[in-house]
Length: 150
Image (tube, rainbow, N blue to C red):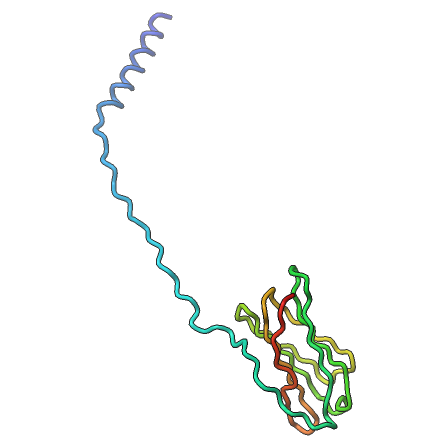
């Protein structure tokens, strides 16, 4: 038993001596990381509404644009409410230009009254453009407005 204990003490001493005889390694320089600023997007979304077209009285329709006020789902609704020009409508295109620069367009062909087009909005001010195409081949921009989040 004394021999095993002496052997263990000898091995422990050798391990300590072997670890202490190594020369310390000088620390190597670590490269310094610097953050390079990323360029801001040079183009901002075009959130400035343009004037709308004058639609002939016989082709006028009612379009209502509203935005949901719940921040977890800020959708935008474009409601086709009909009007005297409803029989002449062949298509409605609703486009949203969001505050974050994303653009989305949805279309409905030959929409019945109370057709609702749902677009994904933001919790900021977005731009909504509504174009209506008619049987005579003309397309008019009937809405171009900013829709704010309340």
